[in-house]
Image (cartoon, rainbow, N blue to C red; front, side, top):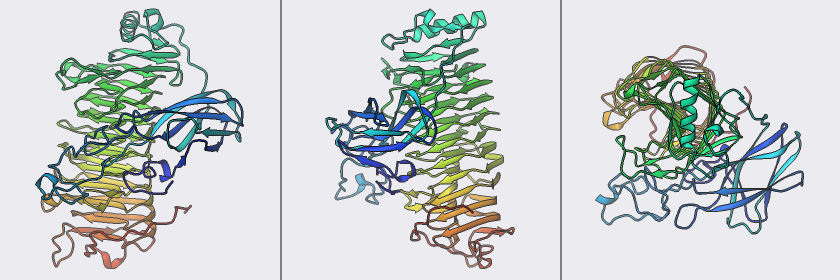
Amino acid sequence: MGPDRTAYTLPAEASGRRAVRLTPGRHVEFTLPKAANAITVRYSIPDSPTGGGIKAPLEVTVNGGARKVMTLTSEYAWLYNQYPFTNDPGADLLHPDWWVTECSCVPSATSPAPTFAKPFRPTHFYDEQRLLLGRTYRAGDRIRLTVPQAGNAAWTVIDLLDSELVGPPHVRLVAANVLAFGADPTGRRESAAAFDRAIAFAKRENLKVYVPPGVYQVNRHVIVDEVTIEGAGNWYTIIRGRQVALPEPSPDGSVHTGVGFYGRPAAEGGSRNVHLSGFAIEGDVRERIDTDQVNGIGGAMSDSTIQGLHIRHTKVGLWFDGPMRNVKVTGNIVVDQIADALNFHTGVTDSLVSGNFVRNTGDDGLAMWSEKTANSRNTFSRNTVQSPTLANGIAVYGGADTTVEGNLVADPVREGSGLHAGSRFGAEPFTGRLLFKDNSVVRAGTLELNWKIGLGSIWLYALDRSIDADVQVSGDHYLDNTHNAIMLVSEWAVKDLYTIDRVRFKDIRVDGTGTSVVSARVKGSASFENVDARNVGAVGVNNCGSFDFPPTGSEFALADLGGNDGGWLAPWMLPNTITCDDRPPVVPPPAPSPW
């Protein structure tokens, strides 16, 4: 299937925008590039006719040997309709009073009322399953995935297979072992109270908490403060929970609870010195309710570390509500989320997110949101973000002295793109320096479905106020852009109020744009130095300014500081020649190649 970047399609949400569709009896085979004893399969199978998902088998063999069977499910996939979405494929519009791009109208105010095919806007098609193979296989061995003839899925789409060499379980002998406090490693009995007892004992005796291999049922938050909890490794220690309806809404608005490790609320002083490592968190979240605290990690945790976790099927993998400081989130895998993978929300400072792998989020992959209180001095470094089905790979909403460095973002789908800085969602202003450095963004520059215009692989958006901090973009690579590589934009209603000014782009490489290298749709200015571009589909700079088109030229000015190769920034464009084509035709670029 594919390639196809059209929203609401299976190829668009696949890695690389390609996948394989199997009918019963068919198979796909992968050759191991390295020794491996474990695999992860990313797949999609149909929803049930009324929503809620189905289960279906997938057979796994290596070199034609013994067969293992994975049980696939679509219970955590298939969302429909308008935000915040529904599991019901037959639902009418959730918000008929909203603008709907498919009819370019507000349905409730339109006569005759428009009709829409159902299911409306299907999305979030994929899920993942992991499997230990039981022995180590060599590079060159062949793994075959077969859909049984007797399976109940009419089709099975395979996106990818990740192979991994998993080490032996980690053992901590001198520790508060949760088994000694009544935890059940078979997952049949609830173990939350046993975790509480182990944590209390460990704090009294100055020990770590150890969770040995097993599956542990935990259906509520485990509150952590001044404690270290270690698992045997995220392939071996699995903490799994059901989503539980609360008898009445909690003070924070939650109507459900579920498995999660939470620091104390910031209003109560938060938690400190929390260290979590080496286990998996598997939630049971199937719909988006923004008030629900059903995240894998939550609360406020200062002077803390989160390392080596595998988190899936929660609302947000890690949502931190500050103020708080000095949390390090490293080496985790966060997949199959209803919303973000990670969000630094409100007054998070001096913190690091590095070396994490994110795939298939339902909102921003990694985000910093300075709502009410500014975040400051935080860094997102060397993370991989793959296929967010909504919004951006990495987004920064306000804050001071932020660094986004050395990350890889690929295949965003809609209403966002690869890298984003936005004065929106009520965020505090950007201050100090905002640095994007040495990032690679692949197959981004998506079509914004509401505006019906192409975004950039990196895009800056002035909605609530101007962006006038020291914004520097250096060393980034923007590859195979669906539309633009770089966009600076404001909302039409505030286009004459706000600016994006003095942004500096340096040492950038752009390989392939469907439209322009730079799209400027705002008042302001930017400078460019050593920005090399090739395979550009339209005019190098699409300069619309704020669309007032004065005789003096565009309200957006460009400065050429030299070394901008590829002919995309011609002298006649400078400083502010109007080159505006509101919706230029898209010319798909060739695949990127070495420079």
